[in-house]
Structures are given as C-alpha cells and as structure tokens.
Length: 265
Image (cartoon, rainbow, N blue to C red):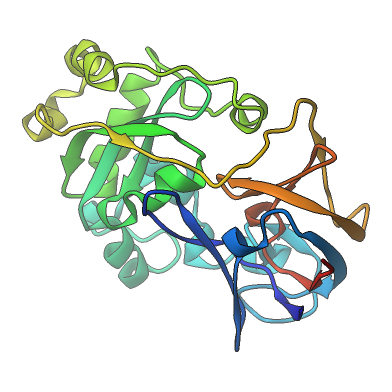
C-alpha cells in the first residue's frame, strides 16, 4: 500500500480501544490495522495548512507569515486566559474569535504520566484527552466561554501541573489515580467567577490505547533532520506512532509535512 499527502493530526474514535485514522484528501489510513507491520515514511516537502504554499513550517502546521497573522494562531489559543471575545475585543478576527471562544469550555484533570490540568472546548472531549495520551481523565468545571476556563486553569496550575511528561507517557510509566478525589481537593482554588460551574458528580473516563509494546528507551523521529524512516509499528498513543526499535513519531508535531507512506509487510 502506498499513500501520499500532507500530515495533519490523526483523527480518533473512542471504543474499547482508541481507533486512529490519518485522513488524506482522497483516502485515509486506519493505523490500528497496521500494528505489527513495517511501514516507511519519506518526507517530500512542506505545505502550510493555512495558505497552502510550499513554505517551511514554523509552528502548528503553519508557515511563519500565517502563524503571525491568522486567528487560529492567536495568543489566546495557547493561553486561554488571554481571551477577549467576551468583552467584544478583537485580537486578529473578532468574528472567528467569538465563534471559538464564546462556546462551552471544560477545565479537566488528565493523567498521562501524572495528573495535569488543562482546558478544551466541550466539543473536543474526549478527543483532547486522547491526543494527550491520557489513560484517565475527569472534568472539573464546564464554563460558557474560554476566558473563564483560562483563569480557572491559571489558578489551579499553582497546585497541579499543566504539563505532560511525554517520555513517561510513551514508556508507560503511569500511575492510576483517583481523579475525583484530586478534583475535590482542588475545588477550593477555583476562582469565584467559575465556582458555580463546578462539576461534582461527573465520573472518570478511562481510555485504552492500541499498544502491543511500549519502548524502553525513546528515539524521536524528526523528519526535518532525518527525512526517511522505516520500522515496525508496535503502538499508537497520544498523537505518537511507536516503533519496535524505540523510535517514536509525533504526527501532530509534523503537521504541514508532505510525506509518502508505504506499508512494506
């Protein structure tokens, strides 16, 4: 089998085991079906996900010019507390920002390597948790806009991490925690503006990833430095492909890379 196209983050479906799909313009791959098979990845060129031009990718699949100008890459995306659409204040494109920011958002706890706090649109649950490689997660508050979610996250990250240790996540150095208990301990730190939105009864979600073998030591594949790789696929977790020789490939970290992918065995 032979595929060619621009990489975007893998789409997912939560079932007993998470299903992973890489979607091209006219085709798609279910990576779960490739476990145990040898595949090759060959980097061909860049293609910005915004302007579509062959320009080196800067961040998030965008070239430098697009990253500096498009609303999808505004500061509020990474730092939700900087959201201003609820005040009718524009960053780059007020109409876009209103659509993105003025909708239900959730502040959550996820356990990928250890417990962390995060923010996502309600519509992105459980996708966001899957993308982070969390084997368990739970909601803390559900608020009506991104700003309230952002200030809640800022308040809580003084007491719990907002980062994932991706190396521990990929080597499966994880602990099972009682996230409802952690949530209850953090309740006192929720800002006053968001306290009425506290979710006391939501249950923990458990997620199982399609992994036959976790790597003991990790080697990261960077197509910008090493444009060709082949190996046997042994698992998928978060947005990473895991290979038999310990190589891990962050698909989302290579958005905007045009690749040729072959299934060899």
